[in-house]
Length: 564
Picture 1 (cartoon, rainbow, N blue to C red):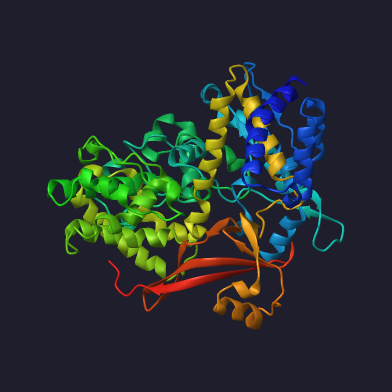
Picture 2 (cartoon, helix red, strand yellow):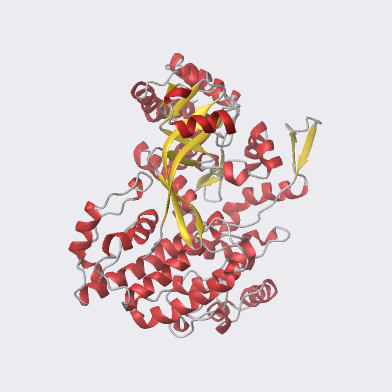
């Protein structure tokens, strides 16, 4: 009960105050909140001094209770049983509907990410991963062999047996090598989990064909050899067997895809931007002070406001300097750079041509969907960029640039890598770090963090809809058909078949499948003859009752004739 009281106090301080202020500031009517979530809030407020009742509410709403796992030296960590989590997840009807429509990926968001293991770093250093990951792997094996029994909410034909396993594991390079049993050093020896590349090769070889690729069969031979002779670790780049290899069909070589966020947005792109800024400074074309001044004056759109890059440090042009930005800030800076300094850099400049080449690569890599024919073009672009960049800035060549050589083949294997990157997981991790920093717990931080995260998941998923709502609107006001622009009125009546006296709402912002659309936002709609068409949202009109809503975007289109 002490844990429940502590959890209750944290919820009271961390969630209720922010919820109450948000409801007052935005004049939210409790009747507009889904039933289960409204009951959740009302019960919390009515039982503010009763943590026992609060704990009962959490259990009734399906909160998965974490388990404390003790190790040999009496240290412990927290484990949230994944089988219970999966049963709770599949108890929602909208999950089944999304599976039937094959759009689960489009409807999931950060609120659908949950924690499984919370352990201190020092505990991992003292104990092997096999011991810490044992309960997780045991549950995965059960999920593979026995499955879980859940009710089918679509066909309503009784219970269904669901089986599953691990397809891929998304992690940064250090984490992937640690989990995969590979060497955790990227400054010497074998540095790549996809091939047998040596650190000394990254400045000399610029094609994937120049390297011997790792295969599951060869990797298995390397693991057996290292188990017999530990000195072979340096020769093969393998330290031990992967703990997940006990799962049928799992292979270290194929189960750890590259992470686009850490490789590109926190690796290749920052180093490339540093080389560009250094070149512009040395050539006298543009100074860091001028770039910062123009960035300060640049009008970022609403969608870029939260990712607006911070001012660049003056030492970024030095060999010891670096571009210290987050992944989203780096991407924003990379994309707006032509609009910031494009007018003062000659279009035929060597560095600018290199930027255009890198821009073409990034647009393909970041695409949510790709045609197979584009991969041949991507391979040529990457090899060309690699060859030129090693000459342009040889001191900035790092292993992450080498990983880029494997991307065309790996995209063909895994699909668009954007769907496997760590961006959303890092956002979830930031929540965990924020809780750990603010709770001021010095006794059992793992238990505190796990309890609070599970309470948050309980609230986020206590609604009948577990996934992202199809339509989640923000501030809105009622309007009439005759008050809308004429072209919108004609479209609503003639094309949509909406009555002239229908109830309509003008919405300032709207979230659909995790994407936020707002008035005055600009989006890239399509390409016509290789020219981009941009649209600006003028009005967002919503029609219909809850559950049968129609959304109409009133937009203005612009086709760009000349592109830098």
